[in-house]
Image (cartoon, rainbow, N blue to C red; front, side, top):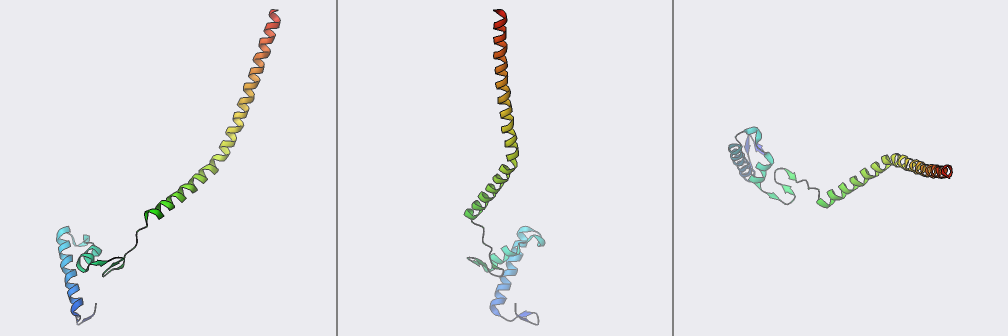
Length: 125
């Protein structure tokens, strides 16, 4: 703000400064505490805003669109799923090996039962 000897020399700047001070006082009365006054809200209310710009502050940050956030979340989900699959691979291999062992034991058990049944039939005859 341009000033000479502490006084603002531009009438428009003086008008804006007065609006800012009035709005700050109004917000301070609403909130009740000087430290809790949101300066950006104060400037928005006092000076107004345009799309993409807040007077006295500058450009507004754009919010991330829902589509971009969704795509990002999907990418993260895919990466996590890939990591989980990689970590599960050794366990899956062990599980398959255990299933094969169980099948072999079940087959042996069936064969043993048949042999026992046949030997009992032979002894009875």
